[in-house]
Image (tube, rainbow, N blue to C red):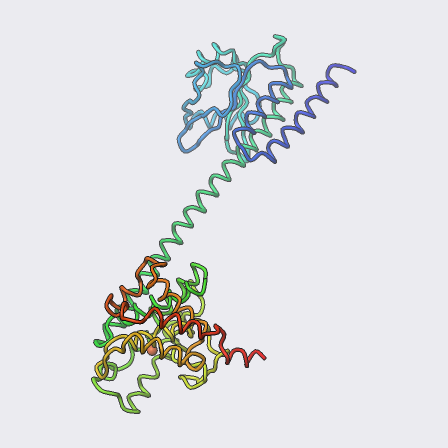
Length: 420
Ligand SMILES: [Fe+2]
């Protein structure tokens, strides 16, 4: 078999290997080292290197070198004018001995000659200079033939594609990071806006200061106890913060009436869930159901709630959570016409109304949250911060909670009948 033919077969198999390297190697550095090894091996070249060009820093950084010695500089500056000259040359091999007029060669002439670099091949992919391949002399001492140069070009193209792909990946990751940061910023802004709204709602009602914020926090606890994911828990908390936003349009003297309001005033006040829904609906919330929680947080499982008298399965789950959180806060805070009720009474009340007003599994989740805090399993002291230490540690609460939990089957009887 003639020499040239043998060389071609050898080169084709090296090219196939190189193609696989570029396509499959996750380790970029290893891919470049293996590629250089294959390129030098297929032409029996003693030394060489592959450098990547960073347009941002106008720098050449060597990714792999072989046989160039410890004193070979592993990075070099590359001016924009150099870049232009290489781009003009295209993907053709440049002989160092013939390239003395180029500025890059003038600057690095000494080191290139000392290291006996004979050929430099610019790596140009999609009109972009992505790097350079440096090649020393052949082991045989013979000059490079046209076929050798064709082989260098073909293999260098593969290496160039590998570097280009890597650059794209890095850029993609950078943009993904940037998007993630922007998204996080937006979520923070949204959360701050929600909290500001909750404070504005609470300001309107001087007797229930901090109500919306507390309902948000109780709702969050319930969702956590139900084992919901982080995003869903946050969505429920937001729904709790905003559930009474409709009260912003109710007259201040109705909200702040120091007596039980009459039927007309009550009808006015009872519009707030519908108004809240209208306010929240056009806003793009990162979580679903926030407007529905506002609309249905006064519905009851037994259908005796308002505004629509929905029953169990018709009520959005998020609204059931906010309903319990809302009722619990109403029972445990002082109102102008009645004092807060003692903890044991409230616990009994939730149980008694379980299946009528409240979904039993939500009551169970709420009890569980309280009990894990009181027994020290949950160290966050969330209830204590919301209700005060004295209230949370009133006598007999722990056995009462345990007893209540034993009596709960965790399933809504109404849901059960409805499903059957
Ligand atoms: Fe309300």
